[in-house]
Image (cartoon, rainbow, N blue to C red):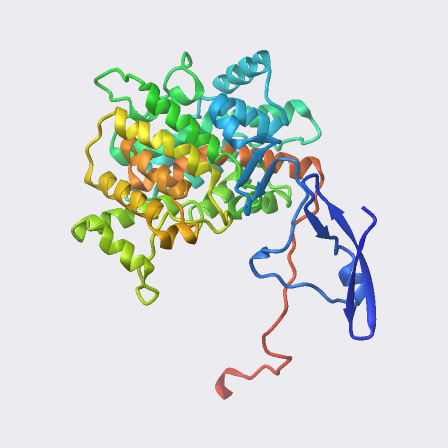
Length: 428
């Protein structure tokens, strides 16, 4: 692309090249800005208008409600693929052949046993510890049991690290939940598919066999696919910037988990259920709370509606709404919290105030409903988000290292005191 952008500072004019993506996104390349202008920088709080990298992994258009992984539409992937196929595509660039998928799954299963000493670390946490803090710690601890650094120039080394974390991470997720519930830890079964085994590890009781519901399995498969990547969000950017220091994969993932923990990011589906609990405690009047949501002077916020990225609709919500309906209807679950959720959904979809402002239920609203229906505790919701996001984080870390991206080092505009003299303590 030959076009340039011109920047005028006082009497001086500077030119910077434009770069264009395959979906016609245009960016001004300002890597020479400081040098050319004698120290001038840009400031962009929260990096809302700043591209930190060029990536081939995920395309997102919030205005049109488009989400694609490696060029594949999220709608088609959710309908036709399973989570492991999507993970492979995100990490390696293309959907796998049956032979590649079989080998991938077999290699993951072969690396799924976690060093038994990890249980000692888990035992040190009280049951009151938040599962995200536990999961972040256990993921970081894997580094101690796999001390050799990954040679990113070796395909074999990279592949072994990838299948290792994909094998061990679901174990850590299930152990985190079972520890909190006082249940014995297990490994599931290598005879099962990837998602089926996750369900078995999480829910199997010690005194009975676990029967896997195809409806629950299908819903979880879709949820994991829908959360697998989402461009340069807070946790993904964290994984990339930590990895840019050449920190290892496990350490970078641990940092991503901590970033995801925040209520403005991965904690949104937990916030939805906490809101529903509060509405129930106040009598369950959905019309009252819809009116509160429309009142600008009321501090109440309707969680799980609208999205800061998607200005029209969240394409993931359309997909998962169907799965939520199937889980609730086919399993015949009776739960006043879920009844309140359905009431809010119906009112929001028919109320002109919400329709005109495109405040539709988003993926966090429906995922929280499904996880509750599955019997997953509310404090585990963000852990399930992390489980789905794992292949995206891996893909982003891998891309960043293979592209030999420089260490992340944002600039700042200093607004503190100018030079001043030190005052001895007796004179202060």
